[in-house]
Image (cartoon, rainbow, N blue to C red; front, side, top):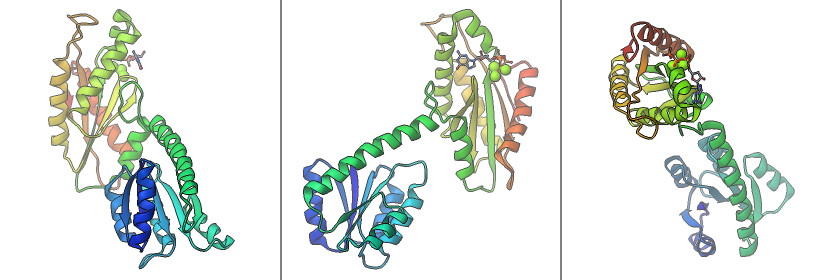
Length: 284
Ligand code: GH3
Ligand code: MG
Ligand code: MG
Ligand code: MG
């Protein structure tokens, strides 16, 4: 695991760091809380924070609370607090501040490593749960809920745009080649879209959402047009060499102070027009 350890003493950091490294962990030593927070902000691969309560500047309890905010609900971060005081009130305060566990300082190596094995078990479980709850299994895209949550997390820029698209006459593909061939097509279309846009979600069966933070409707239309051409160029020799796929797209402005639902409705109207206009096109 990747472990950030925070203690004002370089000697303590060296001793604990060696123990953890010998057990195969990657260690990031920090002598103060600000450095630790900065690291957590920049590096989403940190699994564990081990912090002393007694720090210079920001206290270990404040660090614990801040670290919880930084990690949020989408990231597994296990926090182990160390303190030379094992008073009950200290333990309670640490756990209530967001720590997952507590160990008396200086910790015995075997106990510290055993507690980190617990951390490892829980971190695996938590990241599995986060993945299962947010990632669509067929396509690897954000699922519908995660797409909406991600959109809500974005600070609204001066301009934003959204788009949705839907595979044309998809029912025919299922009916002609079977459901599993349909799944192959859905996955290939998803892959093509994610190569052109960083934020793509699977909104439902063969319908996808694209998010353009800071982008205009014109940007959205340009990207959709690129995806449209990429999808039209896909071939599926393992299904039928003659099979070609098209998609219809609708793009819309996402105005400030508007829920994304409203912007999606706008995009949906455009998508409907694209379908009615003959499919395999982008409308805004
Ligand atoms: P249109 O051009 O108007 O979009 O026509 P369409 O046939 O694509 O539209 P419709 O919404 O009627 O059909 C979508 C089909 O997608 C219906 C449903 O059975 C199928 N579908 C939904 N989810 C999945 C999936 O995960 N895998 C497969 N293979 N099919 C799915
Ligand atoms: Mg449809
Ligand atoms: Mg369709
Ligand atoms: Mg559909």
